[in-house]
Image (tube, rainbow, N blue to C red):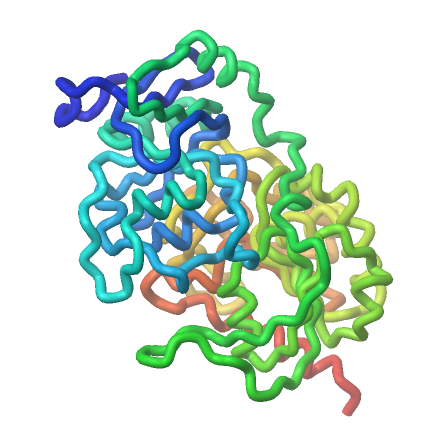
Length: 393
């Protein structure tokens, strides 16, 4: 594989070394050094700062298929990690074109400076179409991204690091992405000329299990009338139920759900046994399936982007959704008391489930991400409706 033609005569200051020994040259961005991870591609045309701060991408090197990344700059409002100062766990970013100066009224910092401040390594001048085609054909590879301004690299060492990295299968990353202690959440969604607000009252008490939760999920729960308490991924059923919640939310997050499930499945089952209305997203969806007796599988290339059509069997409608996952629920493994509610129209993979005998449901995609339309915001009302129905008459 070669770099983009625009950089063919420029000495490389960054390398992307794949686990099969392939070397892709380019120009370095952001932090210097090297990092190893799984290389995926994202097809979204907007929202790169949201993507680069989504803890669900922990352990991954993100290739953007859209060429103009960085043109609206960065700011302090569009960060999705709950701890805004924390490293999102993303290992690096791969771009086709160099970053241009920002041209947006909300821009506070150039993307290159922002990458440096978050210790994130970048490379540009890469033929991202060819890299994406390789991933689609052969599956997600592991690799090392390295940036050295002097252009000096220990290539053999980089090849060894890429080849020896074990990959995401069996890796529990949610524990690192999660909060370490319980805390309340009261911020509401962003409004034009107002920014973010604070809740002025709530109807439902919700405990949100933080496996790497995104801030905008919490904001939409608050908008829906929820008094939200965020608890760590390692919380037990007793910890959760001690809050006497009207509902429990299982968040998105990174890594292999089977690995995180070793300590979270018992907690989820304890909540379900009490009949508490439960809503899961992304990793939360996968671990809910595990708690119900289902299985999860590693996907060939995963789903990463903001243009994924999903069919909702409960409404008969198609939603355009935002997705970010490399594992999926095996629909054939779901027990008889669980129905498949949503399915991907790209590949037929499972994108939602619901229990037939309890107020429990989940989706694989990100309804809070709003990839242009707000097709999926109804899911938060579905959650509050279940909590309302569960209250004494």
